[in-house]
Image (cartoon, rainbow, N blue to C red; front, side):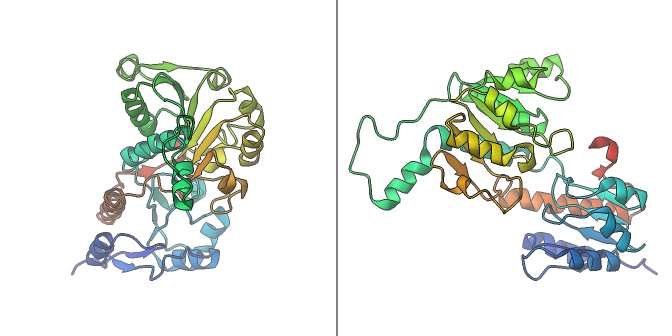
Length: 328
């Protein structure tokens, strides 16, 4: 007699091909709308599921896990970041946590370069002027931006995405610099033509463009705070496609308004969708709605990784993308 299928609850809408495959493999409850679940809905979902498939909008803390009961055995996160999940509490309750690393690397790196170009070349301002009907023809001094070739790019966090950004930026003629918890291997540094800075303060003071590509952890919260923003050149452009909490958002707004930072390209925000209104209004800020990994191909690959993690677990093996507290 075949073993009963795992009960799986999915918290958000996923690509149709992913949902269809889940229905074939598991006893799955899909989300009919794309609204995020309330705290109460998440607890109820964990109480009735063997496996929960959340995403970064689902904040799962120790109290929620305690209220979930003993049925839940795996949290198969749809996404690479797991800072919205109390992984240590989950493991203490014998609940495994898995994620989907590596899938969004190329898509996010593409978005970094898009934001660098959008801010430095003032593309949104040009689009807005065209939409208003302001353009009257070519003028030598109109809409002047800056070149990125020859500029210094400082990458904060030189993991998969940081290295993918470095490769793209080098093709545009940028000088590659980076700050990371650990220095890369010499052969990787040589391939990327990247210069390591042990001191973040010294690096940010000398860069023309800064790209934030590190995860949000207790040690990276407000890594770019008011003090570090004041170390930067007034001509600096800051791009963040990682986690909003890495930058002190209010301090960034003050620096932008004071002319202490020339521009910013942002895809993530400190308080999620509750964005500082100034970031929507300042002309030298490009603010996107967390689109860094938003490609059809990427979302399907993420779903395939989630399915593989669940299927491997169902077969009695360790999920290939298991997250342990020591990794964080």
